[in-house]
Length: 334
Image 1 (cartoon, rainbow, N blue to C red):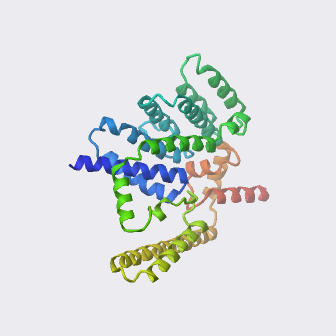
Image 2: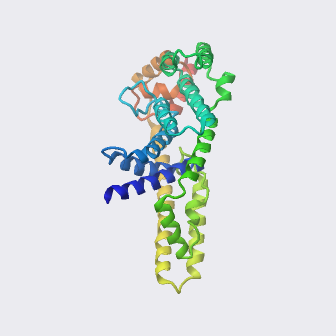
Image 3: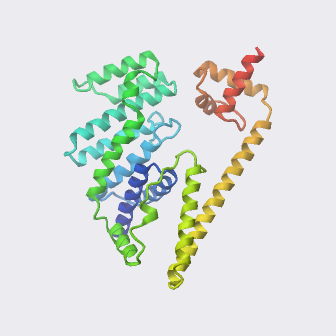
């Protein structure tokens, strides 16, 4: 019984992941990522009919974090998030054969972006190494392999090939695949039951849940998010004022309003904490050792690659922007 319920929950979590990935609603995507990952980890063995669902969840999680080379999903530290995503895409391809063209497009985009992300971070040697791992010696792989090898030699992450097969195009293609997947899984039990329940209460079909939300993945205190939460509060307030005859619904709306107000309060606290942290960083004087770390990092990774220098250096509560500003100051002092 628990196993069946877990399967229903995983299908629902995957559906939510797909929707929030497509809408680029970062905060909700990461929340459902944790849910899906916990359910997947709970399986001692993946049921055959759930493999496609598990593979898709893992694919989306890795593509969403594919720009970061610091994150690690595999035991081998050389394997980047996108290279790990490619392995799950290969498994997905084996689950179906009717989308050959879309499969080929996504595979090619992931391969190109694996190289592109390494080059953007100026890991040119690693880009060449990953190219060797990505491609076989087959004739079908040869044209793209040769082109990417040439691109790596230029050490220019802005060449036309990489710009034509951009990360945003990869996201767009994955969204197309998600759309097809969602149509195939409209019979999801929990979604059907939740829809019936909401309809029986006269609330419409999950108006707040299905509304497109565009949230910057890297900025949870974005102004758009605040506006959305304020609209939700206004909507709940107006509904509750005209629905005093139904105490149960009124109670639910009060708790929802409380949640919205709490979210707004939390976002304000995040902003205050960030401002406080930024101020404390600005007051902190640069030490001689930090200057040496910065110079060493620039020598090893090059000017402009501040994020990589920050990761590999031993800095005290610094940001990549602060590294860039300090480097400018050091040059002026010379």
